[in-house]
Figure 1 (cartoon, rainbow, N blue to C red):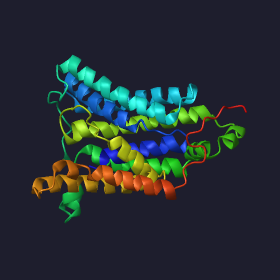
Figure 2: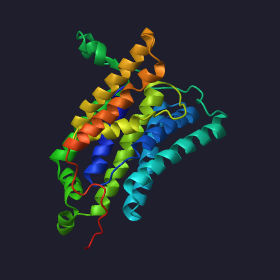
Figure 3: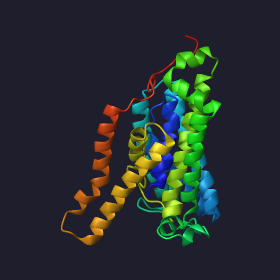
Figure 4: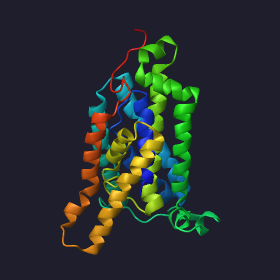
Length: 293
């Protein structure tokens, strides 16, 4: 359950480390979930669906980058608009392609795989021994993203762009190029998180399938201090709360299901409010910088 949140949170870390606030993570997850089912529906290959989801997420990231970097739109307004557009666009396409505004037809999803030695270890084997391949890929990507962001020259360029673009410009760093790269990468990772929902966890797409996970990813990114590993840890917290509300609903304890379903979102609000107070975001986050000044 942490997989889509962790991938989108890492995407948010790259985007915001470069200075671009990415509220559009929700829409990028949603378009990834839809594109994955679309690809699997027409080709029968879930892996083509995964590829198409990454392309769709990257394309949406490029559109968001165009508005925020080239046209200097307000980052928050552009992100919210992108989320609304994606929700309407995917619902409309479902109606056109499948004649339904609720769910798509069942498609071929990704089969779970087992790690031979890992699956035999007590407790750990039950948790991680047999999972969707995207779960294992998520762990690899999060660690690789941390290495890229904090241990490579490119990562240093991304971080200095978000902290002090004037200094980066003086050093000859291509500010806009770094920001375009970071936001598009953010879209690709979020699209990959979205396709896990539709092809890794289920075998279909439903309207508004992201269900607020993009906003949870935004909170996880802030709570994790704009660090992929911190975002992964925070995503475990949110997914744990989501798992609790599912278990509570199945126990029929006499509390209205709507109240129980609020738990993950209440935690998101509380964590985000507390994290914003204590966290120090990148200095130039949300600010437009004109190169050559």
